[in-house]
Amino acid sequence: MLAVVGVTLVASVVIVDVGNYLGARLHAAASADAAALAAAPETFPRVSRQTPGAAASRIAAANGVELETCRCRVDPSWRSRRVEVVVVHSVELVVLGRQEVRAHGSAEFSPIDAVTSIVGERPQPDADEASRTGLVERFVEVAALR
Image 1 (spheres, helix red, strand yellow):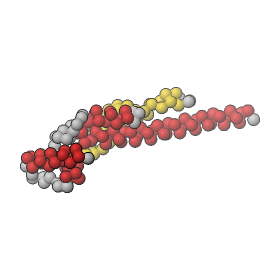
Image 2 (cartoon, helix red, strand yellow):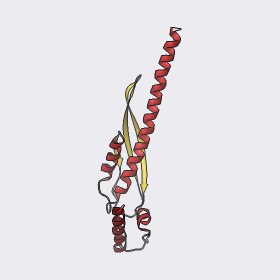
Image 3 (cartoon, helix red, strand yellow):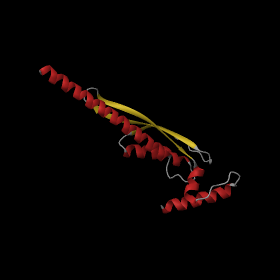
Image 4 (tube, helix red, strand yellow):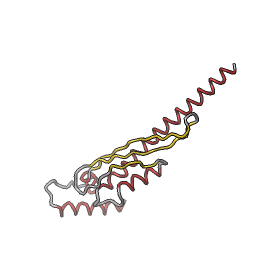
């Protein structure tokens, strides 16, 4: 009878650890996605308020994880761009002790789509720089009102 209680206790501890580890993986994955989403618009310097890495780090910290890497190149062009981040989340397990869980997140950002969604007017591919700059200025004005 004592053996059954011991096996049940060990199995319970292992099950709790597995649950905690899986929960930490889900939390890290969601935090990585959130950090990438925060960094992506900051790669467009015409409207960014901070560096992409700073934005990703701020959101990661707010979610209780640490930003490990941010491949978030600033690009002044109107082309779509993709950012990739890696975050680390520490979890304390009964059997294995403190473990680090890493998660990758990525996001894509299109400056033209962002301006279009806010201003309601799509820049034309052959538009001159002054025309596009005017749209960006309107984008910033509208975004500031929100």
